[in-house]
Structure formats: structure tokens, C-alpha cells
Amino acid sequence: MLILAIETSCDDTAAAIVRDGHDVLSSVATNQDEFHAKYGGIVPEIASRRHVALLSAAVEDALDRATLDFGDVDAIAVTSGPGLIGSLVVGVAAAKAYAFALHRPLYAVNHLHGHVFAPFLDRPEPPPFPFLTLLVSGGHSQIVAVESPTRMRILGRTHDDAAGEAYDKTARLLGLPYPGGPALDAMAQRGNAAAHAFPRHRPSGDSLHLSFSGLKTSVRYFLESDAGRDAKREDVAASFQAAVVDVLMARLRSAYERASYNAVTLSGGVAANSALQAAFRAWTEKHNIPAFIPPPKYCTDNAAMIAAAAYYQRDSVRADPLTLCADPNLAFELSAA
Image 1 (spheres, rainbow, N blue to C red):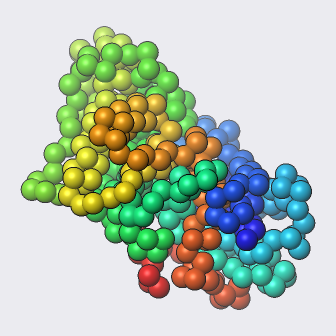
Image 2 (cartoon, rainbow, N blue to C red; image 1 turned 30 degrees about the vertical axis):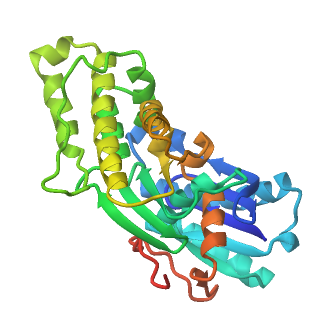
């Protein structure tokens, strides 16, 4: 089954062709960093206008790289939410038009479900159900029990800033360019993670929820202090990163110990972070836990992961090309699950 997928939930314009939910024939993604860098963050109006300008070319490029024509495609998949409403509308409108014109089924995919299925891409054996996912990105940080392709439960989520958001805001405090997460990671690799004892959020009781706003504020106050003004920025970055990774891994370990899972996976843009990957691999290898991490190109927003989710969820996410609407607040749970 060949699925043409479109992803425009934020500022990456992406299209992909995927066979049977895992074999990526092509994956095209164009970021807009240069258009948003001077504002220090994503400007929704600019993002949606860039999608309009780039999406048709991205789809045609994906088809060309896969040496396919529109007629070879068996289905169309698109991110219908959550995300920026203007960006989502562009992708959904295009997908509806393709599905209607080609008389192909249309699948409306939750962006977060796409990240859950990213570890299925370009590998012969996918993660075995049930598995536990740590999904960390610029907009979301959550621990998910994935019982089947259509049954997923959020066990813990952030109360405030997502991990990626905390990275970007802290990077700005350190004077790093946008996007801040990768820049902070690179700086942290040159620093001493034990130089500064930034706080780790500890939830009450047996909660698996997360919080990073206090950590970000602690870094800000430290940088404004006399000691902070003289501190090496590399050490601050490394100490901040160590605190984030400690919190994420503590919650993941706790969640894993509470139930029986066949594997654990790491997904989302922050899954490409070097320190998080190192801690994740060290823990899973020590305890012989089957672990899956997507290649970096599938950690960030991409359309291949949307095609994978559509393939495995196709009976539950079939949509009408005439009535499908973008939903910026799309619920994580599948109503048809």
C-alpha cells in the first residue's frame, strides 16, 4: 500500500511516500528557520504563507524521488491536528483536493500519533505492542502507553513548558540563535554538567507528570546573579540539559516499572538530543530492554511518520474529502479506538 502523506502542522512543509507503513520511498521536508529566526520564534502567519508557496513542489518532489506518478498512489494521508490552525488548513485543503481528484481514500492523522509511529520507519521489525513511548518535542512532552495502533493512553504529560520549549527559551537566555534546542545541545557537549545544581521537578505521590517552567526560571535567575554573570555558558547549558534529561528519564523508568511492556521508544524533536539519547540507550542496554529511536530525520516533523500512522490506523482515521476540517486542538485519543 503506497501512501502519499502531507505534514504542515507547524513550520515544516513535508511530503512523503511510504509503502506498507515502514518502507520510506521518499521524504521531503523544507524548514522555515530563516524566515522566523529574526523574530526568535515561529510566526504563524508567515508559516502558513510559506506552506502555500512550498507544498505543491514538496509533493511533486516526493513523487519524483520515489519515481512514481499520482496514479500510483493508493491513499492520501494528512496531519489534521493538533498544530497551528493556519498551517494545518493548508495541508488539509491540499490533501482533500488530491483525494477527491484521484478518487483515493483520505486518512486524517493526529500529529502526535505520527511521532509515536516514527520508530516504525525504515526498519524490518517494528516495536512490538504493547510498548512505552517517551514523546518529547517543542510543543509536547508526554509518556504514552501504546497498547495497539489505535489504543494509546497518556500516562504523564507536562503541566507547563514542553521540554523542547524549555530548551528554546533557555537557549535564548544564553544568547544562542533560533532554533535554540540544537544549538544548546551543541554548546552543552563542551560544558560540565555538574557545574551547577539546577532543580529537578518531583511530582507529588505517584504522578508521572512533568514540569520544566521552574527549571527555566531557575536558569534565568542564576544568569542574572553575580555568580551567573561570571559562569561559563557551556557549563550552564550542560547543567540545564542534565536536569531536563534526569527528569525525563526518571519518569520513563517509573512508568516502565508499573506495567509490562515489550519495548520502549523515544520520539519527537527532542529525541535527537545527544544527552537524552545517551541516557536512554544506557538505561535500556543495562536492563536488556528492547529500545527503538528513529533516525534524526524522523525525530523532527516529517510526513513519513504521518504515512506510517495512517497505514496502521487506517480503519479508524478514514475521512471524507468533502467534510474534513483541520483541528488545532485535536484530542490525543482516537474516538474510533
